[in-house]
Length: 71
Image (cartoon, rainbow, N blue to C red; front, side, top):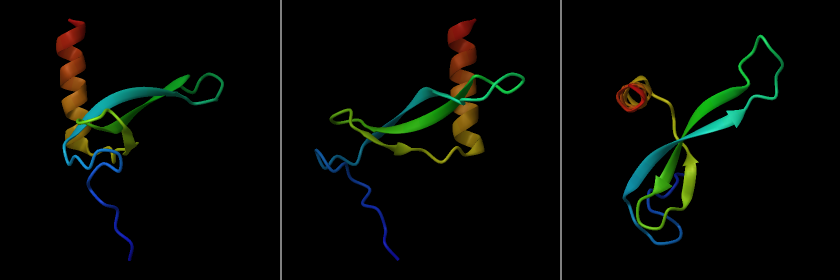
């Protein structure tokens, strides 16, 4: 089984940060126009790594952060 290296291919940093990106769903109403996706980014150079697996804990962290910033 092939495993993906956890270090960044550009700078070899193992540090990662997460960002929120809105992706167009391409669907008409009543479906949402945009779908939020969490992306994994290298903390060293800022390179996009992959879309993160959206675990319940990660989604809750983003929801709490957005709630604090929007109030």
